[in-house]
Image (cartoon, rainbow, N blue to C red; front, side, top):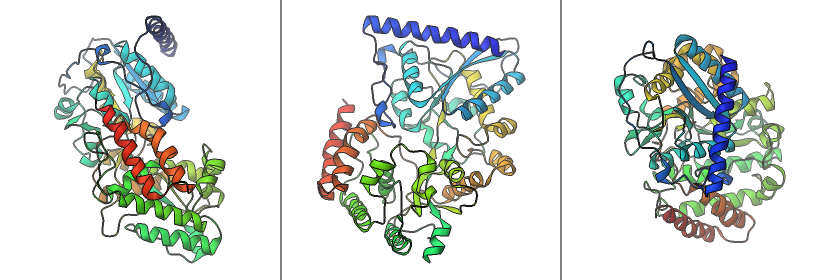
Length: 474
């Protein structure tokens, strides 16, 4: 089986190479990746004329492939080597249970993945099952490349009957389901509990405010001489979550403009950053750029003891804890929220499995996705590598297998499930352009280096962001 897969993968790679060669010779479609972080990948999707005619799913309640029908299913994903190994093992388990299904798989790193998928979309050769990203899903749907999955869910082929709606809704576009969430994530503040104890500072409650946060960061610095907060505050994700706490969002629902009218909220946030930077209570933007851009978790300030807090996504705690050592006492808590406001946290799908409109075997693709999210033995192999599983039964089954940091992430996501703001639509196509060309170079860096005021930075974000977002709608 592995030899056959290698031959098939080689043949597929040669086919993609031929497509690329013909496209280059004929001035073919742009193969740049759709917009999303990392922002360096910003680019165009293939022209709509290059997309295959949309197919419709056929409701099927069966649990396995049709008897006697040989099916060659194609699946693609991005990720680390650990993800590749775990996913391939589950694929082999599925093949063993379904002897008439042969699965050809493709995997790569983030950047190569989107280049490859965009090229295949242009040639009408997308796989049956495609791993999708929350911020990219809307654009791929708008190009007619993703199949709605509601019929498969209604028939039970993809069983989501025990899954909370908050874990499903992130895959909906305009009311239809296009992506099955493979794991939940949420932003978190990592607290070094031992540093708090040495400073004589109480750990904050789950519903702490931004005012509490600033006071705690200043006190930690004053007592310990380290940064109260290390990495995270200048990331654009905090801008979005900041407005979520006020019941708004960074972008309008149609993605044509910013989603809020009150720039003062962002101005106040930038002023807080300047106060913390001036006091030495946060990692300065200068130090962030010079010492901590692109570094691994082993060099993170909270790992090295240079900071008492950091802001990350919940599935990153394992890497942070492993880098810091088992003896480090980290506590995970919600993002701060506005005084009297809503939670700044939402449940974010770490990634999806989607069925493409170019799929040759959409029914079998749906059965495989159901196996992937609901089979206990499969998930014992996957071990929540893509985030906290959306099925409560799978979560319970995995608990005895979890290490301390994974268990902490599971427990944290459970708390967020009970205390969150509803997820908003995926980032619009112009998001990557805005982050790359406006957020840091025109707003964050000029403000943090004292070249412009927070008021000017907020105005710059609105003016330039609106230009980018409105241009994407044309």
